[in-house]
Image (cartoon, helix red, strand yellow):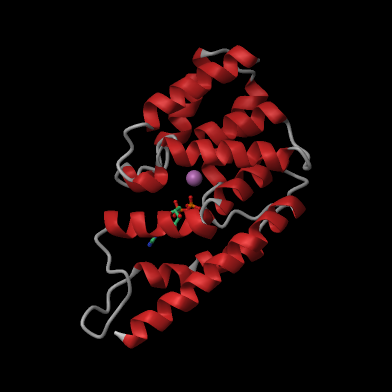
Length: 203
Ligand code: ADP
Ligand code: NI
């Protein structure tokens, strides 16, 4: 199993190393892997499925693949079939990749799919706190969005993304461990938003 993990690790690293946007690159996957492993120390779920799920969760994000929602799970399936992963694990990883994203609004109970609960919590933790702030502005820059809206640009801004999504993440955590880890990151992010809004009022 150790060899298999190393092989999956090297494969995902090679695919994601030159990712088009710094917030969705190999380092994001590595952080999600480590956070998933930390959460899994105190939460249920098959450890191999959690590790593979974390490694493959963003292997081909539709945002960077012309909206193609299938490329991620297909890439993972091809690799898993070539590496003789058992059918039940392949099904779980496929289901995890298809449903991890926030915009899928997939409803389930953590007891029914504990591996998704853990990896989704890890992915959400990486969207808040200091690193979450960095990722939001990286993605906003990639999309050429303004930092915040003014009367001259009524378009979507990165600041609006904080209000629309990021400040709600802490209430969407699945596991008790994930909830606990989200608290401090959330508080820090709220302080940042408050300061940011104060400063743009002065200018
Ligand atoms: P998910 O993986 O749950 O679908 P996303 O990939 O949309 O979530 O978001 C992951 C990261 O991209 C987050 O850190 C988020 O802040 C950033 N992001 C997504 N959409 C936007 C946006 N419109 N503006 C700024 N950042 C964004
Ligand atoms: Ni992710």
